[in-house]
Image 1 (tube, one colour):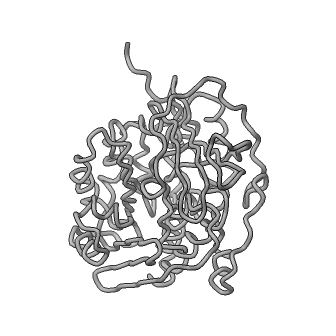
Image 2 (image 1 turned 180 degrees about the horizontal axis):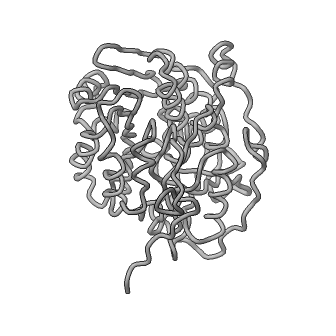
Image 3 (image 1 turned 30 degrees about the vertical axis):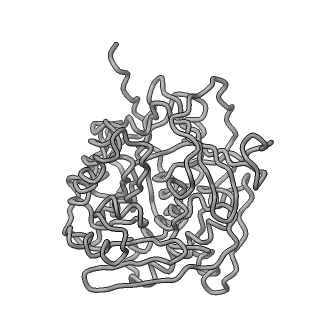
Amino acid sequence: MPRAGPVRGRGRGRRGNGVTAPRFDLVTLGRVGVDLYPEQVGVGLAEVRTFAKYLGGSATNVAVAAARHGLRSAVTTGVGDDPLGGFVRAALRGFGVDDRFVVTVPGAQTPVVLCEIFPPDDFPLYFYRPDAPDMRIRADDLDAEALRAARVVWVTGSGLSAEPSRTATLAAIADRPRDEAGNETVFDLDWRPMFWARPEDAPAWYARALTHATVAVGNRDEVEVAVGTRDPDEAADRLLARGLRLAVVKQGPHGVLARTPSEEVRLPPMPVDVVNGLGAGDAFGGALVSGLVAGLPLARTLELANAAGALVASRHSCADAMPTTGELDEFIRTGAAPPEAPADRPAQAAPVPAAPVLTAPVRAASAGIPAAADSRTDNGGSR
């Protein structure tokens, strides 16, 4: 039978309805899903009684984080034709993220992710992503004009793990001007070995993406995949040798390193009481983008990103936990983490209506993934 293709979302720019998309500060491309996080801490899933439902997915979280800093952001991704797909769209709009580039894939189910919470450093993830719609985004689903015009485009390593997402990811950044000041193409190295049929193929595809990037962000595991070394200094040098303008190596309890051809900034971890480390790296990414768009000095940009990651690690959710610039300034000034907004009142958003849960069972695409491999706790860091 022929494969059913994605259905274009509303307001898709020139190709969707003849209306030119605005110039975005940030367009991300990658995963989306629904996070179900336990409200009981320190117990396994078998003992959990209740869960809180949040918007999730790394590239989506980065777009939300950037919107919290006042940026005009959008995400290119896919959802299923199901109630949770409607929840994703409503949540994105509630957070101020444009959903015009979200496509609906007939017959697919919007991914669900569950976790266990064992502070301070163990947050196993359980992915339910059978034939995930965000991995079925094709190059012809992209709005090439919006991608060329965006001030920052953010793509991920996991987007390279399978087709057709791999071709779409590379197409999204192929025409970006690499030598134009004020336009950045960020490659989030985002190493998820369980998403790859042949993990040994990843370095070659990472190398392809790096030829189009101006900024690379990753932890020590991720830079090793990209450039063959876990040493932060050597990895930063090798990334810059690929023609990048900025290399950021996150080291968790050892802090973060950022290097350009002419400047280097190192920051130690920010101490927080960790509640849930998931999403810390995405908060780091959104704050990093805000600094790049604003043209802030590298030291200030890294200060904000470092604080954002630590602050989200002190909160329960991911997307809902993303801080504003004002919260980060308060945190940096006082060292005291501002409290998280109640889950039913996300900042800068009206309450998002709850969607019915799926009644059909979903086969697990991967499960029991250790936090060190896939939790994005590598904010750069917290302790």
